[in-house]
Image 1 (cartoon, protein in one colour):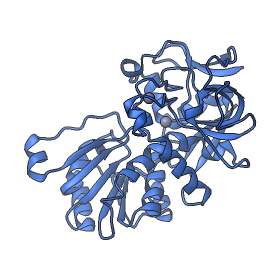
Image 2 (cartoon, helix red, strand yellow):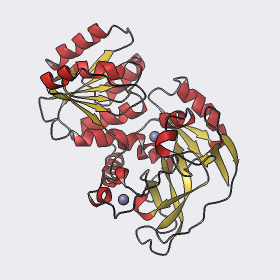
Image 3 (cartoon, helix red, strand yellow):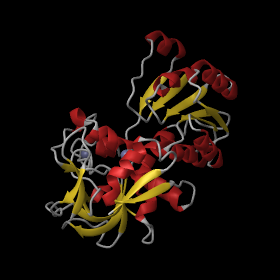
Image 4 (spheres, protein in one colour):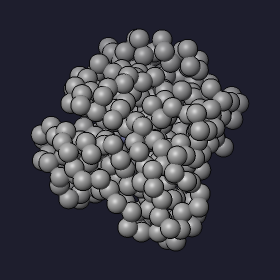
Length: 345
Ligand SMILES: [Zn+2]
Ligand SMILES: [Zn+2]
């Protein structure tokens, strides 16, 4: 089958023929990939950022945002059957470890992470397992949902964790109205009652943000952090209860804590930069910094329900699998602002 494989860090992956995956365990599921989302994480993988954490054996197939149709199942699989339309939770969790027992699939001790540490979905077929597959309405087009599997799920997970705090009268600030941010903003509008302020350097992205639920927007293009902070403090009456940083680099990680009110929380979702805080600022304001990694299986089920109800939708641009490198260059050069690249095998 055709696949996009990373052979060396800091080099473009190679589109080539590789052997098809095989069922070897009772819980295995093989999926005919209908679509694979392209993610900034793929660029970070190529840069080698994930090597010390995931230690994949090279070469391997990229692609961790996958949806398609079940092709073949292992002997114990009863929740899906060949032909079913499915989206994959990014991790193949075990169901037996302490994290799995409390539903925290992303922290499973025995999981694989297709596309990060084993072969992923930028290919004609993907090997996953029964715990990872979410069955969708048969008519769902994988191209419209694939990128929700990780980017969408991560954004939704962060918002979902904050729902208890974001009751009427509270303020959320979302930084970045790109791929992650536009799902986060729609999720905030769909499942919380807070006022939503969105920051982005791109005015076009802010116009989009207004159309999907932002109450206020602030352009960050000027680079004048003091003025940005003042605008946000004015809008929020003294700072946000929660700042969702969907960027996590380019200075946004340093700006975020300044936008909080006392006892506020800085949710880190995008990554790449370094959060630096004086300990006296943390204790005197009692602020929190909270990491967000992917989401739970149930988060993905909920997000699919919101998507089916038309409340959360991802703007996408399709590329054939052969054009993967073009798509990566478009992502890297900011040509996919507010839009997600989708690879179709
Ligand atoms: Zn991703
Ligand atoms: Zn587990």
